[in-house]
Image 1 (tube, rainbow, N blue to C red):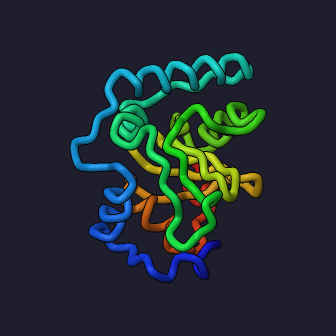
Image 2 (cartoon, helix red, strand yellow):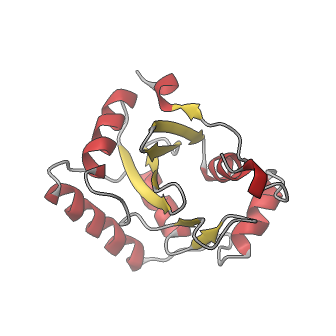
Image 3 (cartoon, rainbow, N blue to C red):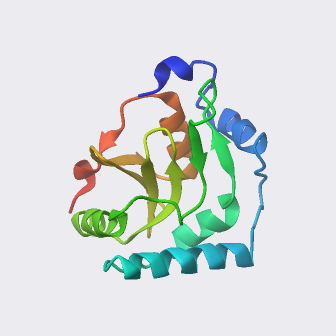
Length: 165
């Protein structure tokens, strides 16, 4: 996907942690009530779209820890940013999120938006990360560090259908 732009990032967790830390994250970070506000806004927005979404504890944990961060991709243009905000999406995304969740047999909730590809990052109830893109759904990783590393590596992502029930 973006391999040519990301050759300088080693995908080992320490490098991902350095990348996150350089953009405002630290272990134990918690945006507190702001996370609750963001979740409530997204829940209301999804309901208005006619496709209710329910946040899992895992999704709320991710929003509390990373919410509000703007994470530019290394070597990318300024527009290549992962916005850690569950309220950013695209028209009709709640329906598509609900459909993907049904196919996976697990609730999904948005936690971020990628500005370059205009895709939504999602977390299921077990903490797995998925990516909703106009070309379909993809698996990002078993947890946030694996998801960050896989997305930044530029490697081809696994199809979400490999995880369908």
